[in-house]
Image: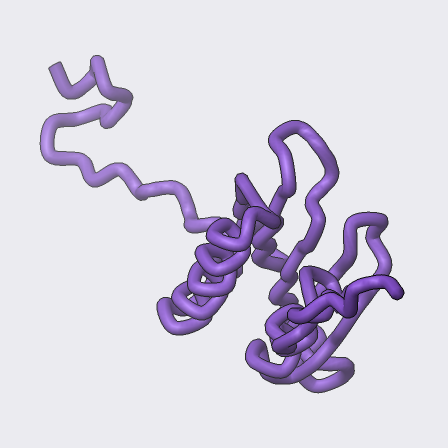
Length: 131
């Protein structure tokens, strides 16, 4: 029966294949902060869907206004850039870099500014009626 599984003789230890290089992910506090922002943007009617991607080089969180379109905002964590530009980056809908930094809070601050809508567009709270 052990020949069935390719082990050879009974009691032979088969070496497990070596593990690939680890993937990059978000820490619990980072993901909590990102999902808190996502929840606020959903409540404001700005975002409706999200996607996450994890690979060897980076972790990505993308927020969508509608399904099946380009993400309105994309947050990337690239630890390889930690010593240079900072490992956090915020990208706009057309792929432009909106903010880079060493701290997630600083990068997300450009979206979280009071009085500003998503992606830094000014939205006055009290509209002045036309005369």
